[in-house]
Length: 69
Image 1 (spheres, rainbow, N blue to C red):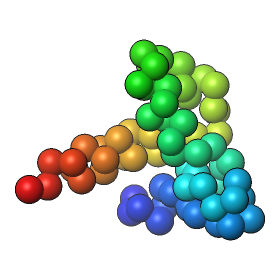
Image 2 (image 1 turned 90 degrees about the vertical axis):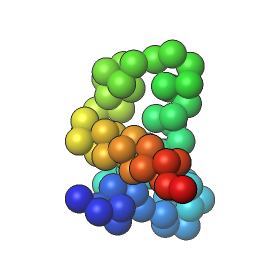
Image 3 (image 1 turned 120 degrees about the vertical axis):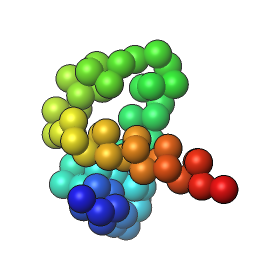
Image 4 (image 1 turned 60 degrees about the horizontal axis):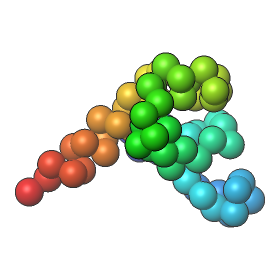
């Protein structure tokens, strides 16, 4: 699953905010939930259109991007 399978940016969807592909859920929302001590499970319950695989892949890619020297 590559980045274009995970995230889409469309000016007609939430004014171009990056969202999980096939949803209207901003990727930023996942990070906001985690920053506010919600679990991944709680995020997935609130946003059932986002799959566990999608959320985990976004987190993995974010981690990889941060660890690049």
